Amino acid sequence: MVDDAEVGGAEDSVELDGEEPAGSPIPLRTQAAQIELAATLLAHETLAERLSYLIDNESFCYLRRGELVFDPEVIAEKPRGLKQKRMYPPKIASWVEHRAGKKSLSRAMIYSYASGKTRNLRAPVALALADFWRIDARLLDPSVPASQLDDLLDDPEGLDDLDRRTYELMNKIGFTGVRPREVQSLGKDDVVQRMAFLEILQAIDRSRSSPPDAGQPPSS
Image (cartoon, rainbow, N blue to C red):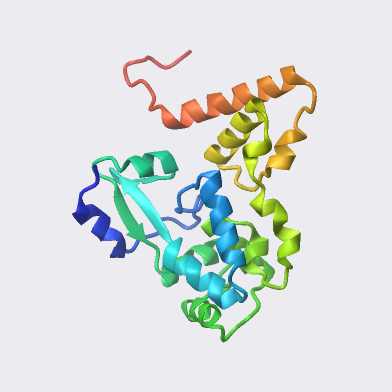
């Protein structure tokens, strides 16, 4: 279990290393959590409200043994040594600058957006912020009617067992932009093709979750 001292470490900030971030430090979400977040953001009418919510509630990452942890199942289990860290707005702005270009989002600018003083995000900044928080970029554009974002609230319960497992693995691996209705179109009635794709996803999932066998000699 994670002790209280480690959970309390959420106020520590995260340092960014290197010139280019390989990916968002924010962990993946379960599909239920992704749908809930989309619904929550849509309930806020302004960009400032949505950014403020994301900064306050969705800007935490998790580390264990010095490595970022992305798997929501591992985080939910709270293994010993798991530490929660906060990404403060200046660090978020720095991450965005690595993605969208220097001076694309300064520390002052992110506070200006969150306070409502600046209302419209430039497209590269919106895309970078969406990548950071692992959300659909349309959620950062309040001018998009909620009726056009129904796909973000798709419930995978209507999928058959094969499609549901495929959908779960795609989200677990990191294909967070995939919708249930899109999974249903994969292979359509070709069960062999669908099974082959599922096996590929399972292999990727195993390779990500299983450490290499240190005692096994490298293949020739």
